[in-house]
Length: 179
Ligand code: PRP
Image (cartoon, rainbow, N blue to C red; front, side, top):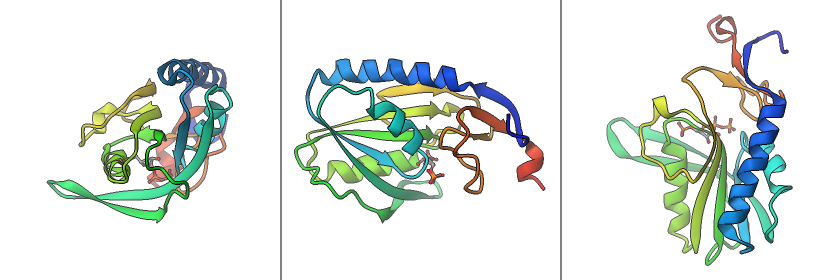
């Protein structure tokens, strides 16, 4: 275990098993219809790589990099797109992949933006869900695990761009981010 990780929430084996289950749910849901998978950079890349290998419908893969900055109590967050999707998504079934949903602001804004481009359907799959911090009700079709409100790293999730490569989900030691 990494020296800066206090404890492991989900082992590599548990994550693998759950991703396999999610892929099965997603395969049943689309029933062979073609899907454009959009991975939200950077955190969801690890999840995306594991998941798409187990999808059995025609799959296109694209990426978006965006952050949302909520504006206080006003409900319309603002989306900053750092890298847009490159594929034509009008008329396509979109499966949006996220590593974690926290306040829900980012996913809410991305869904709104993509819907405006005339997609046929949008579904979401998130590996981790932190319901305690939710500010925006967000469409969550496939959820890997609900997690407590703790500082988690690994399986794509970072602290200061580190730890994304850990194959498990761990709780970061307080001393690391409070020093
Ligand atoms: C994380 C995560 C989501 C977002 C969730 O990305 O991947 O996109 O935050 O937070 P929210 O529900 O409060 O909007 P981050 O901006 O940390 O970028 P990264 O994936 O590159 O680490």
